[in-house]
Image (cartoon, rainbow, N blue to C red):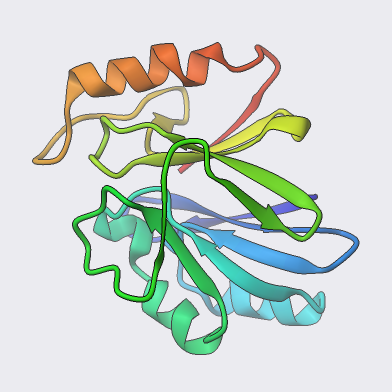
Length: 173
């Protein structure tokens, strides 16, 4: 599996493009960055974007979702079943679901706290995880509004993420 990060957007977010080296099947995690450079990257490498993975539905993480669904109309959008967003046409996912990106398997981990619908995408066989804002660079996510809960975030950090193997690489949002 290959990973390319893109940084920008409202809160200097991280958006990731991941793909299978063998099949060229790709997914974008959190369309939070102006998409022109991502679209160009996909095109120049001959990738096939067929999934859009959302870690949570704070506006800064789905800012450019419409741009991606318009350009890649056959791409499926994966979103937590706990979302309150109008998710008509999206695929609802929950804890322990498995998603394939080419030959790579992603384990879905429900990690609410930063927001009620926060989820992480864990590549168990590769020892890496995409956390959205459940984990920021250098610290845990914060709880600053409705839909956030510090006790729930504590549980997600200490009883889910920190239970993963110690050498797990974290890709924050």
